[in-house]
Length: 440
Image 1 (cartoon, rainbow, N blue to C red):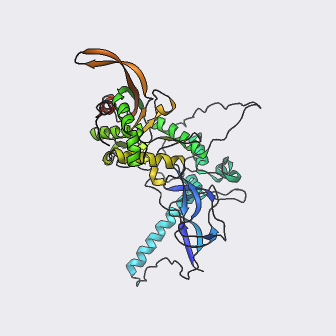
Image 2: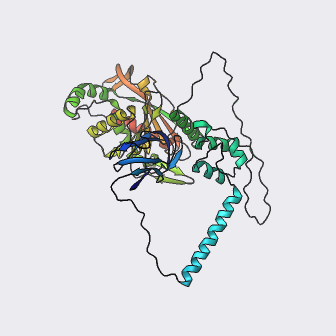
Image 3: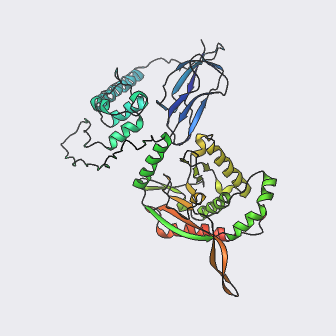
């Protein structure tokens, strides 16, 4: 029987694993080329795994809610073409005395490492509970005993312990057991730090208890992690966007007829942000330990609200290289696919700075949380028609203007107040200098 190994494909530079959420095919089902076999979820986006060959599904190697590493075989498919995929084997070469000694040394080293790992922690699945390879690896690295692992309450299917379950347990452990390592002298250990946990919420019989969605849990985790990682500081500024308002009103119908796209304010604002990032590249960075990584490309994240109340951030790659038409098409495409849950994993990878439009829901300003590992995020407030002072050569007048607040949250570890303020001021200047006679 000719077999094909369906593997978990690479889904972006920072995605190393995914959770199986559902199988779309069962054992015995026929699969066409480029047909979806299963659905997976990462910490960024949900996606489908497509099959590269035609055949029959003969074996599923993972169950729903199990975590799979990129490159791991998920299923076996009978291709029925008589050609079985064979892993190439290196040609045998005559063994020399030196090569034999080298192999013996390598084997001895592997034995030492293997014994050391077993000494640290040896955990395994039992008759009552199954543990995925990822959970067992985490347990070994953190020195969690079999007894401890068996006591962890699992939130997965049939009470299975998931990655988040064991990470939550590790975070809340009181006094981690020391791993057994050979030492030359006794080293005093600091007293364990006891984390204060929030008091449990007591619900009455009339209260409704709603389980958080998987994406909701991930968002909550990332937001708390971002607050604990970055020193958040905010700068606020108000921009007069009357010229942009009037220009859009004048050209939006022609734009739709000519380009087949609705012209919203978002691509106009994104264009200004991309220009400002080009002027201030030290906001287009990430922090890694004591080093700053200055990003070459300007990839703008665009926070998008979903119908279920969750939020996702698709990324506009090389945003500074797009003209307004290209930016509009990219913004509309990503927003539409986000709401239809049709984003690809690569669509949410590689962002270097994020923009969120809180004005969509009527808010005049906000204090957004930084999208790690970025160092800044800009919130756009609602555009309001307000009385304002108009400066002219003939004197100052009061007139009706369209104005909006912008809130800039940035990481004060690497971005000082001057840089944070200069950046958002540059965005304001680009918006207020809009050419009212600009061609589409």
